[in-house]
Image 1: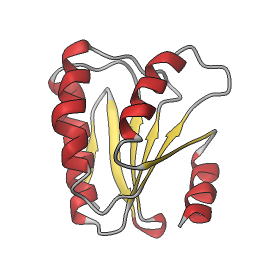
Image 2: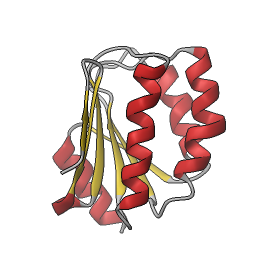
Image 3: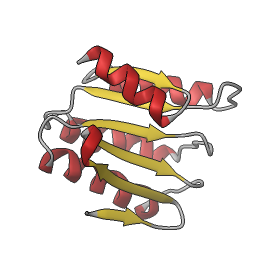
Length: 130
């Protein structure tokens, strides 16, 4: 199994669910942000009809340069994959709503976007949409 793991993030493909799971561990910027997200994009390209789950329960902050890169480079590249659904895992009480809403809106230009409380809930919601 291909996997990316760093002190900032873990990215892997979960074959049984046909999902690329990106789990943020802590704030990352620059290459520490772009390497795992680019790796996730490559996994989406390699695994036809897979979907994308972003675990933001450990917090999610943005660096302005990474937001610009994400909107102009990463998301258009992801849109070239067969991914149809993006799910954000978020805690119920969340202090990053504004940043997540910005990403939800931008992802929504390319994908169906849902939110879930945990991975199992995300898979249930994805299956209902497929």
